[in-house]
Image (cartoon, rainbow, N blue to C red; front, side, top):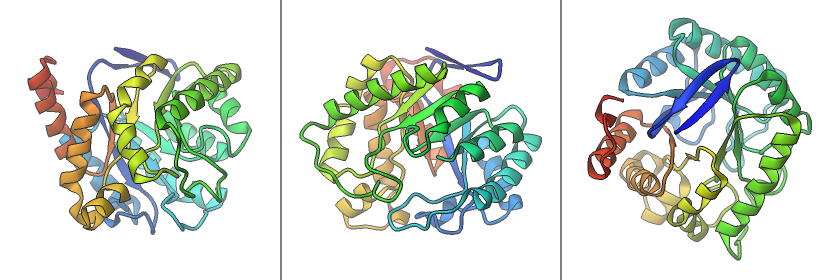
Length: 282
């Protein structure tokens, strides 16, 4: 069981939960995840909450390969109205903001976001970690390599598990020095990793338990799945569910997904097999 503190309110994670993806973008790789208007975002949020989402992850910038970098002002214009609208209509639902900009993180938390999800692990902008510490919210720290411009260049790691452990030990210490109290780790499935390393990441996910942090897994409809199977992102739900199941078996705590209903079904069935009580009522 993990307990996180967001602006003085406690968040308990004592069984696997789902984070639903809402992209306030025109160019995210999976078109169905895009919410072109605040109204469509509210509709998507309502459906995800009804299907069992514990957290909604709202982002205003695509991080797919070859995507255009969006500047701070435009990202704020995209995400803040959505965060405000979702928080107003569904006040008890947790919201994370998906950003690597400290200015966006601050504006999003002021608008109602409960945590910050940063693909850079605080490496792109040095003010990010101190900003999150001042905001007093949990921080999702993802593994990635390179810079903002080179993060998708593929690296074949000699040992992906050791690389992840070394990275997170250093990043967790940096977060603590900045004053961040609650950290969630994300191994960064797909970000600059070759398919073999992505599959090894899933296989050895349990090794990250040594860090004693909640573990977020973001594999939903990613290219390692659809390129391996010779299909499209739209056809990748079954492959996603397979990897979700493997992730749950290797102690993933949060599944970041496009398809909340199917992820919840995986969690329920996992609980039935392994004896976790009341997962069917989560």
